[in-house]
Image (tube, rainbow, N blue to C red; front, side, top):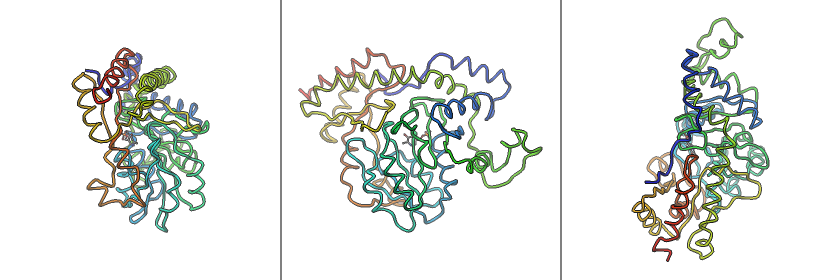
Amino acid sequence: MIDFNRPPFVGKELEYIQQAVNNHKLCGDGEFTRKCSAWMCEHFKANHVLLTTSCTSALEMASYLSDIRPGDEVIMPSYTFVSTADAFVLRGATCVFVDIHPETMNMDERLIEDAITDKTKAIVPVHYAGVACEMDTIMDIAKRHNLKVVEDAAQGVNAFYKGRALGTIGDFGCYSFHETKNYSMGEGGAIVFNDDRYQEPAEILREKGTNRSKFFRGQIDKYTWVNYGSSYLPSDMNAAYLYAELEEADKIDKKRHAIYNFYNEALKSLADRGLIEQPVVPEYAHHNAHMYFIKVKDLEVRTDLIRYLRSKGVCAVFHYIPLHTSDAGKRFGRFHGEDRYTTKESERLMRLPMFYNLDMKDAEYVADCIRTYPGFN
Ligand SMILES: *Cc1c(COP(=O)(O)O)cnc(C)c1O
């Protein structure tokens, strides 16, 4: 069976975990946590990168730090993972979903302004597949309407918009290091921001409402409870795993692009015959080959093709069920405007196996299976 995903493994992970154990420092903000943050600050030109236990918790922090309150509205795509919405719904906000661009599956920035009301507090662009949203337009709208921008860059680590790292453009950026993402620590994430004013509140929120981070830096001689907070700090053992991957980020990036480009070439003939559609990357985006998807004619073909691939030992998957069609989505949100593409395109989309340690021979086999699928011949 060719798996859909395996967590990345580059080689030094266990050595670094051993080192974290030897340091007798397994809790957060140890050597490897600091190394990961410093690496990202440097490579992504960000002022502050705080590791968190997940992208979901980074989004929750961003929601708190954006001062989201009950009754506020937050604009986001419906075609996204539940965490994008959950983080704001937890603060009592209503999700206002807008439609997507069919080519990139990213929120259509031209539809945002019409969805703004006097309750709107934030815009949450999701960089689907590590392909940047049209950030200049989004930032301009946010500025004119005095809204916060929280980038859900869970899939956008080490991807860029006009040369700027995703996650560093809005007020906050949220990364995921879940095992399904390009760089991993099992479960984990990070919150990114440039404005120094957020540093202290973010640290307090992450450290159970205490000023423990300041204490560790020797800036105060004892730490106390200073505000509300939670526990969003990951273990240094997990950070050790992540640091091994960040050190090899170029290698991981190259391999993923090799797989992406291979699929793209190998399946082009099907696209030329109008049987599938391939992903489109806008000029302004430098993507990170987070995923490779194709779109087939409709839900029926997709179901049959996934079943066929299964029978050939290939695990291909689909996602997302649009949030506005789910039980919770109906309770906590509303779709603004017409759902021209969200539902229709989500039903046609299928993801192919894509992970760092995928054997190119296996990628060839996957492409062969798709090309010889009876429905295409
Ligand atoms: C993976 C993902 C998340 C959640 O990441 P976790 O680290 O698992 O919390 C959120 N948003 C998007 C778009 C994702 O792909």
